[in-house]
Image 1 (cartoon, rainbow, N blue to C red):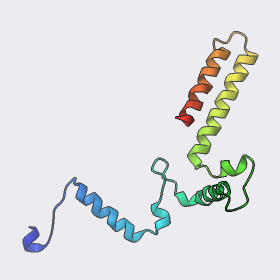
Image 2 (cartoon, rainbow, N blue to C red; image 1 turned 120 degrees about the vertical axis):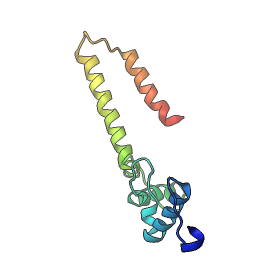
Image 3 (tube, rainbow, N blue to C red; image 1 turned 180 degrees about the vertical axis):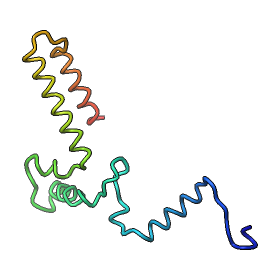
Length: 122
């Protein structure tokens, strides 16, 4: 069919996906093409904060100090993960402190926190 009427039939092909990607590249501006592949949040929403921190660290601008510039440079999902972990640890600490019959001990709490910290370090 391709030789006669210049039509190509593609079904479940990688070539079709590549063609769609080329078409999208022509239709969307570059700032909407750069997204976080897990959350699909556009990188342009938090890119300026990340770049400001990098420039300050490299000595090109005045270095921002404190915790909040780093929080602002996180994606929305990262903020939710850290907030959920903080609330969970707070709930478990309160359970260990205020419920003497709780089967969750301080050793278990330390293992839980070490597991979460390891996910950031590795």
